[in-house]
Image (cartoon, rainbow, N blue to C red; front, side, top):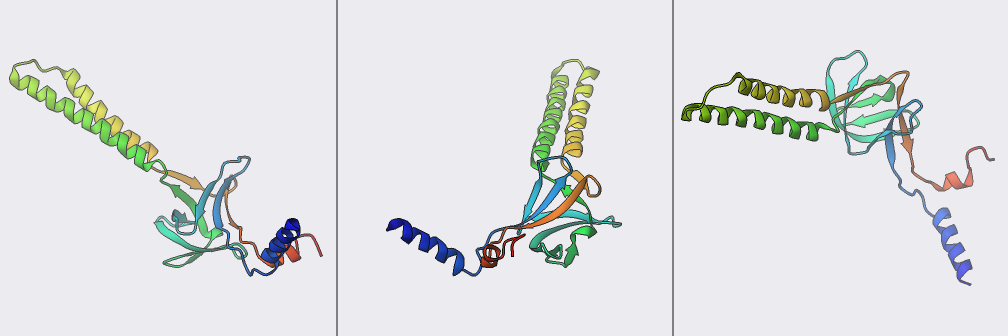
Length: 176
């Protein structure tokens, strides 16, 4: 009795609902790799168009998997128009390490100046420590804050639509 009721509930769920909202995903794939980068509706996408030098940083409003169109606040772009994706995933960590090394270098310079003012001797090694600490801080920020993923033979963009509609169950792909 309970199994019939459960079966009727599941059948009613699939037959009498219009659309079950899923997700739409913009996916950056690299050939031969399982790991992908995913962007959802509402995420900010940093990208450059093919043949342009300006960076766009726009929130994704909608995606259409059939036509390959991405809708942003300022317009609509096809995924084939996008030349590279700019990933700023490590920006927070790179900035934190930059601040840490620069503060260390400036603190070393301050303590060296206080030591010399009190009567200590000046050593050029202090200048090397200060300069190298500040240089390493800015190098970390420059190297690790942004990654540019160029799209082409190795990488591609793909839109996935995970919405489920009753027609998907009534007319499955490959069926009659």
